[in-house]
Length: 193
Image (cartoon, rainbow, N blue to C red; front, side, top):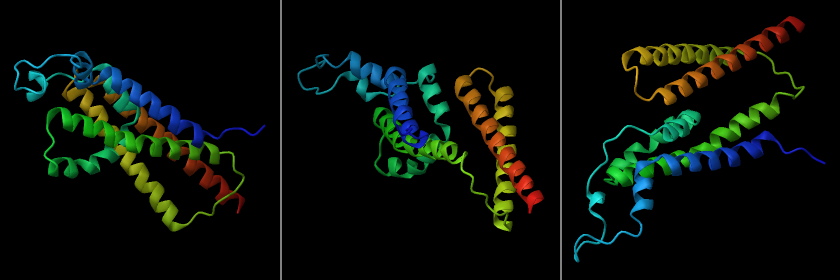
C-alpha cells in the first residue's frame, strides 16, 4: 500500500483546523450564529441593528491560534488588503474577507511544508551555487530580524495577542532550524566534493 505524502495530507487538515478555529473564534461569526433567527428591530430594517457597528474587542484565543499557526498565510493574505480597501469593506465584511483570503493561502503554505518534509528523504544532492548561498544568507538575515522584532514585541505590549506572538516565535525558530539544517548539509556536501 502506498503511503500518503505529507504534501497531500497537510493542506486538507490545516484548512479544516483553520476553519474550525475561526468558526468558534471570530466574534462576528458568533453574532451571526446567535442572531440568525433574530427579527428586525422595525418593519423597515432588513438586518439586526448590531450589523451597523464595528465590534471593538480583543481577538479571541482560538482566532489568535488560527492566525498564529498559519502566520505565513496571514502575511501572504495581507497582499490582498488593497483589494479589500478598494471594495470599501468595513467591520464584518472586512473581517470575513480577511478570513477568506487567509483561507486561500493556508493550503498553499501547508503544501509547501509537506513538500519539504516529503523531499527530506530524497537522496538527490544539490550543488552549492552562489545564488543558493546568497539565498540562505538572506534567509538567515530575515529570520534574525524577525526574531528580534517578535522578541521585542513581548516587552512592548506584554498582554495583547500573546498566543499569536508565541506562534510567530515558533515559526521563527522553525525557520532558523530549517536554515541551520540546510547550511549544515551544504557544508557536508562541500566536504565530500
